[in-house]
Every structure is written in C-alpha cells, then in structure tokens.
Amino acid sequence: MAGSGTAHLRDDPDVLIRVENMVVEFSIPGGTVHAVSDVSFDLVEGETLGIVGESGCGKSTTARAVIQLPKPTSGTVSYQGRDLTALGNEEMRKIRPDVQMIFQDPISSLNPRRTVHDIISEGLRVWGGRGVWSEERIEELMEAVGIDPRYSERKPHQFSGGQCQRISIARALVLDPKVIICDEPVSALDVSVQAQILNLLEDMKERYGVSLIFISHDLSVVKNVSDRVMVMYMGKVCEIAQSDELFDHPVHHYTRALMSAIPGAQVTGQADLLEGELPSAIEPPSGCRFRTRCPKATEHCRVEEPQVREVSPGHWVACHFPHERD
Ligand SMILES: Nc1ncnc2c1ncn2[C@@H]1O[C@H](COP(=O)(O)OP(=O)(O)OP(=O)(O)O)[C@@H](O)[C@H]1O
Ligand code: SF4
Ligand SMILES: [Mg+2]
Image (spheres, rainbow, N blue to C red):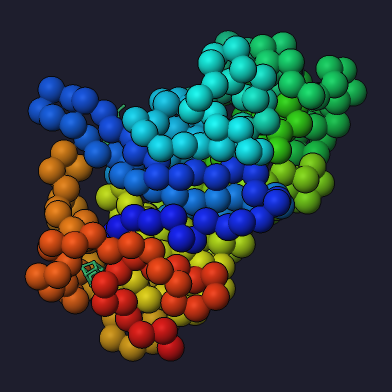
C-alpha cells in the first residue's frame, strides 16, 4: 500500500489471530504519529507469518498492539474469535499466557538480578497459564532450548547473547502458549548464532505446537522461517503471499526494491531501487504512502489509496500499478 483493505483475510476455522483495520497512533508534542494505519492480517494455527519492512514501518507497534500493549486506537484484534480490544484487564489476563513475545535484545530483556531458573518459572507464578508448575518442567525446557539445567542458578550476564535468547524462548514456552510473537529475535546476534536460534525456533514450533509471528527488517531471515510473509511500509501493508510466491514473484515496487537490495538476489525484470528518505510518520504522504519513493508513481497514486487485491491465488498486493507477475 501502501494501502488498506481486508479482502485478503481468510475464512478458515483454524484462524487463531485476526487483525482487522488496526490503527495505532501516538500523540506527541509535534502532532500525531501514524505508526500503524489500517492494517489487517491473520494467522492460522501451525503457521509462521513473517512481517518485514524498514525500521520505523510499525512492525513492533503492530506486534505489541496484538497483545493490547498499547490497545489499538481503532480496529479489532480477535484471538480464537474473541475481540481482545473489547476485553477488560481481568479477561485479558486469562488470555495473555496464550500469546507470548520474544524481543530483540535478549540480554536486556532478562532481569539481571534473577537466576535463570527464576526467569523461566516467573511466568507461571505471574500468569498461571496452562503450564504445569514443576521442577521437571523447568528442567525439560532448559534442555529443550539447549541450556544445561546445571546452570539454572546462574544469572543472565553469565551467558552469551545467543544463550540468553534460548532462555527467553524457554521463558515464553513455559506458559504453553499457542502463539509466540518474535520481534527481531536474531537481529542482535552474530550471524553464526542467528542460524542456531532460527533452527531452535523451528524445532520448538514443531515440538510444542506453537504458531509464530516472526518480525524482521531482514528479508533473507524472514524468507527461511516463514510460511507467509507480509511486507509493511509506513504503517501500511504492501504485499502478502506465501513465502516462496512472494520471493519468486514480487509485484509491489517496495517489495521489489527491498529484494534488489539483498546481495546476490535475483529479481526478474527491471529492479526497483529504493531512493529518497522515509517521509515523516506525523505527516505521511496522501494516497499511496510509498509514492514519494516509488519509480512508478503517478498522479493517481497521490490522490487515491490502493486497496489489497489478489494477483494470483493467495497473493495480495496494494498497488495501483503493480509489476506484472512473471
Ligand atoms: N511509544 C511511542 N510514542 C511515539 N511514537 C512511537 C512510539 N512507539 C513507536 N513510535 C513510532 O511509531 C513508528 C513505528 O515504530 P515501530 O517501533 O513500531 O517500528 P519498527 O518497524 O518496529 O522499527 P524497527 O525496525 O526500528 O524496530 C515510528 O515512527 C516510531 O517512532
Ligand atoms: S505504483 Fe503507485 S500505488 Fe503502486 S506502489 Fe507505486 S506509488 Fe504506490
Ligand atoms: Mg521494531
């Protein structure tokens, strides 16, 4: 888009999360930040949805608003058919264990004064959740994520970044969640460690039957872990498709520009190069928000916002003049 629309939402009984027309705005002294503007997507049980886009496009805000931190300015977020935006704090508390988050900086997201054992078990004490409290369960999870249970009395600073991210994953899993939202989970790690953590997430997904929302600014990371990928630009959805389809046949000019920037990537047809600065999120461009940087923009793009439409089965784009699917 960058545009709007809900035509791509699926009518599937296995839909776990359905985000519809979500808007998140922040009031700041200079005006209103339009962080997420009419975004819709869904997540089906067992699926990994990748969300990708440049820094500041609203990925983290989208993720946090799913768990109602902050509550969206408007729109709905349904989990298993219940609209979370309409729930009070007490009802939300019962659902919170089901949807866990893992963050970018593993070391600072763990309490430095707590032992690993306390960090992993804390969620059970705070939230209850469906997870069964037992020492065996903590030990099993430590082993599952590759941390020796003999180190359970150590503190985060005694572990590497990669090991801390393993501990974060155990902490999320202890509540027996249905969904884990991973916000740039490997961006702060060395490349060699990134692959290990991505493999671990895949293993945990299979073993514990969780579904994932996987956020990254790095297309090549998202490609390998996602079943479907949603590309965002300035708080809007540009394109959404099965991962292979999106990477083999990108049609949105922003997606194509992102792909052209990956070293060694092959984008058929003329490459769209990303030029110019990201506009202000306080005064986003009219019509298509990508128009100020789009090589194919016309007057029409200035006055009318594109809506998502299907270019091939399951492949959706919000662009008035998309690249022809080849
Ligand atoms: N609490 C807040 N108050 C004001 N503005 C905010 C707040 N949180 C986020 N923003 C703004 O909202 C927009 C989206 O930010 P967000 O952190 O969601 O982007 P992102 O895609 O996760 O970026 P990154 O890749 O850098 O993590 C940005 O313009 C950001 O400055
Ligand atoms: S062609 Fe127009 S609608 Fe499509 S991405 Fe470019 S500016 Fe947006
Ligand atoms: Mg972020």
